[in-house]
Image 1: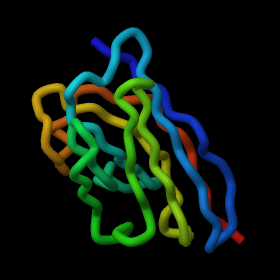
Image 2: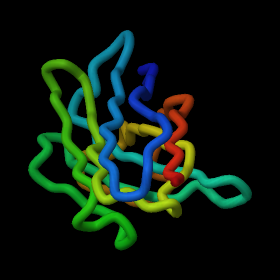
Image 3: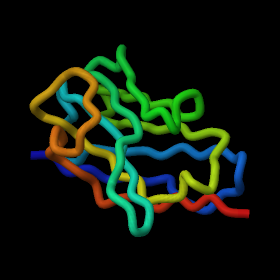
Length: 125
């Protein structure tokens, strides 16, 4: 069992950058697939990015490809999402997640079994 905690959210202007962090408490991430999802008001939680167990493979939703970068540090048991060129449509609660059953990149909600509480990102002028 692991506990995940996100941080780094806030209010930014369009075009700004922001980095989110996710830390594991109690246990390390081990050799698990990790990912980020987001949920905007009134919408379903959607996939943002995933990273394989060693960080060598990353996969992004089309809407964030080229703007967001996911990374992980298995020694520190942390994961980050660097977001650049932010747009108003990026506004959402961002959740970090872990998929204990997998080691390769995954993009479906049901493939992940551990979730953080979420951190709010608001992009507005």
